[in-house]
Every structure is written in structure tokens, then in C-alpha cells.
Amino acid sequence: MSIETPCIKTCVIDPATGFCIGCGRTGNEIGAWMGMHPGQRREIMAMLPERLRTMTSRATRCVTPRRHRT
Image (cartoon, rainbow, N blue to C red; front, side, top):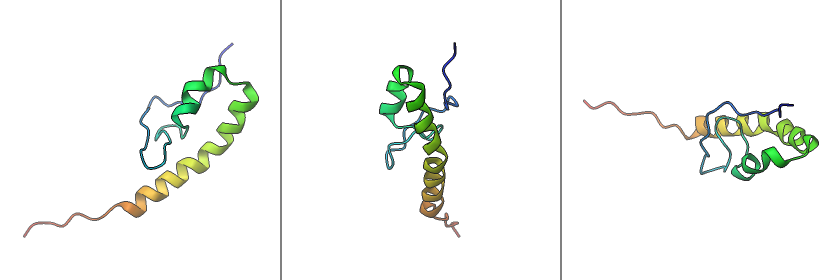
């Protein structure tokens, strides 16, 4: 039996949010994932799209254009 996971093998924790930039889980959630009840995993997975949207939105707002040297 396989365990459903949102992991896309891009495991980098964003220091500003504490969320993985690949799947949106926290480090604690990633570490505990295999021992969680399926219902707990589904609850977390339901929150992940919003977490990822929030990170993308925040990153877009924080980008500053580069100035070209003349």
C-alpha cells in the first residue's frame, strides 16, 4: 500500500513562511507524514494549494526590477 504524498521532489523550506516551496508542507509535516493517519494527511493536503498561492503571491510582490548599468 502506497501513501499519498504531495511531494514533487523539490524540498526547499522557504525561510519567510516555513513552507516547502515544492509541496507547501512545513518541515514538521514532512517529517511526520509517514506516521500520520490518512485523514490528517488529507486535511493538510487540502490546505496546500492556498499555501503555495500565498508563497507565489508574496514572491511576486517582493521582486524588484534590476537596473541596467549605463
